[in-house]
Image (cartoon, rainbow, N blue to C red):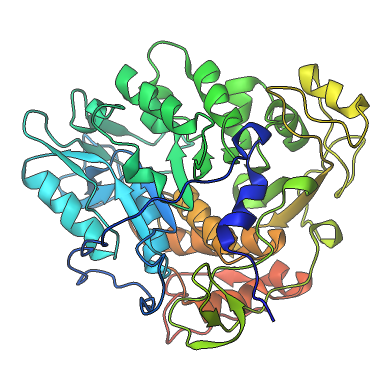
Length: 475
């Protein structure tokens, strides 16, 4: 009996039509050591025996990471007497969380040849992330910033960046070779990188351009108004998001950028990506997925499993399959007060379109997609409420959510379960100081993600809930 197709073939289904070409395989000599792992070890270590694609990363995260100074107590920056050194950066946060969850991850960035650069590289490597493609700039410094501990969405939040002219701002197609990201299954980017410099924007455009063998592109809008001095945020972020395969965007971000906060209206603006995840803050999230471009129906082989009957990877070695929920996105109930898909629609119906995308709805079902337009397909909309969380620090939840969702994607989980894993990863970040947190062990996260709707609705997570000696209770 033949095993399932390689995960790469399944991931290919979510690409825009213009990018669906036969992927060219690239040979990688060997995976460099990921560096010391004395900070936070990955949950599991993948077996490399008999796996010809073992050097290929599951995810490459590209972007700036900086040394961040966290306040020793609440209050204004002017009143805080001391700070604790840590690291910060949306893309490296996602990389560290995915590596800690047991995935093969590479971070691609650029830091100065200075002590802060050493600290960043060593710390990120300590999570089990491959840092072999990080550039070291002898002429530009590593960026640093200071911030308060309040939520970014409030006026009380303060952040002061010292990143102008940083090594990361010099990232460009010339300084970051495409080969550093081309062998990934998923390439994760954010809108922050595009705002750093004209060279960084050129790099983002190159990485999101359709081409044979392009990795599946995950794009977190991550709008930071303070970085956009030229007023082009709306235009540039919309361009990049429309070229991605998976998009994460907050309803508040979309309202500020494109004057649309309703999830269905956001989907109408972002009609091209196969999946759009709209984050609704403490209420939860809603994912729109084009049925004709669903995520992988087969999971990656679980790391550390022994060969056995069942699923196989690209090399033909067989692994025990992962048990997945059979819940279909259309069957999700108990939205927990999340907004409906639209005033006219219901969960499972196609999101309304406007403008050029509306023409797709009048075409025959078997008609080819117009050049430059997304392939036609009826959307499913999956709302999942967030669990209640006792918040310790309201920073880092968005990056953790993306990591949890992408981890579920790599495992071939259904949409509702991927969203729940995103919420659980966000809860791990919210219940610790700083931006980064060790995710819950996979068995625990899987158990919580599999709760029925009533139990999920009563879930309350507080500090320490991810620890092995902690029991998560539901009333």
